Image (cartoon, rainbow over all chains, first blue to last red; front, side, top):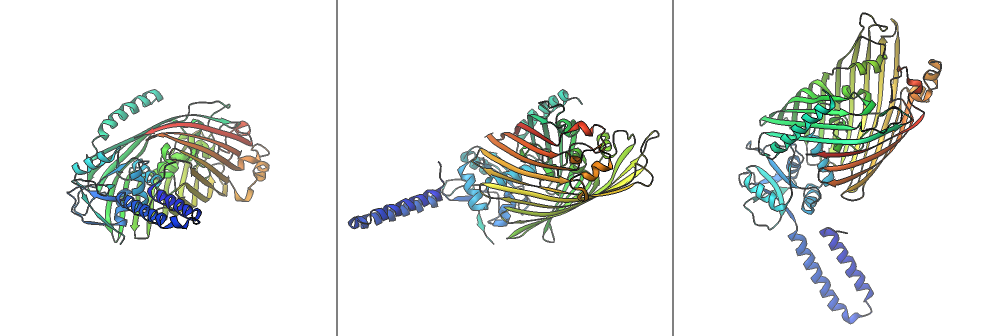
Length: 170
Length: 395
């Protein structure tokens, strides 16, 4: 069974707590176990931070900040142009790609299948142009770097010519 | 156009579209779908006759959207459909309209469609013939009545949609006015196969309002429809001139959770008819119904569905005893209602490939055949079933 990062963290915490309870009688070990627990938390936090998704745009996009609402409009196909009139090209990974799932859940606050449903409705009723699905993160970043007006996502910390764009809730 | 030539043209267009689709940055976007299934209706002639298992479950579509400017585009789709006895087999122009988008109209985003447009007022109406967007091949018949699909699916006219995004919610207001061409099959459904004249839809007027929270995991809506029909008899006709009015009021609801989704629509429709059968003939009925559907996602690839759909033709005669008495037993009472229990399974084999199976247990036969059909007494049993297995691919 595959677990996402948060679930892995939860399992780690739970198992460590159980271990602590079971070994309580061996009090002399407690300081060492606490240190181990603290180390685990540090490792887990670092891992979580490293795995965060970030929204990226082609360097031609002049907009510096997007609101959460604007981001949803773009990724649900309801906004097709940037403020300066440039066409927006959205690139995403396949529905089951872990990065796509975490982007949908954590950034858009939607479920991947829900988004996919919306795109199909738009595509097959002539109401708009939906995102282009690409098979890998490398392909997504390459397309994003090469396509003016493009928007997509990647794991934070990757080297790219594309620019990170800030997403604010208000 | 026969089925083979249609399939050949579609296949060629599909190949061409695959080539064009690679150019995602162009102004032109092409998409399509193809699906084929096996199906059977048992003890009822709704899909297949005489309990036959057939391949009469074919849906093929190809669409294009051309962006003329930042706020004007043209969109069109052609489809080939074979649904057995449910509706007329053949190719259709599904939609072809000019889309004019106004990004900001007093804080609302406006979209205006001129031409042949799709009905976007019900949960599944806008992509009713697109297999991968539906939960089942046969949609709940209380709302998505197959015998009347060509009229309910879309219209020639104007449709507008106004959407307002706020930080907490999304409002959408839709309005449409137009009319559709009716075929002989729909005339026969309304007036019986001995009618030889011409039936026309004078207009259909539709309005709906939907609300969603910003996460879009809820969708709540209300829709209204009003339509007038008129009949002009031919020179040698057993029917006389007549007219009919239909009004439909509907509530729609959908909820998306991480591992399950729920959808439901409830309707009430009022239909009256004047003339057609006799100079002073007048009849009015109020039909009611609705469906609930629950889908559980077992994994990324597999999901299962259970659903229940119910419809009564006349709220003053829910069990059909009045209908049976009125027709001196010619029409059995169970043709006044229809209750359907559905289970379904879906397997997403690979990206853009899906296998979907479903089984329906039905009591009653109101949505199976016209009440004026001479074969009604032997057409369908009180309890009958239908099933299908459908393989689909889309791009």
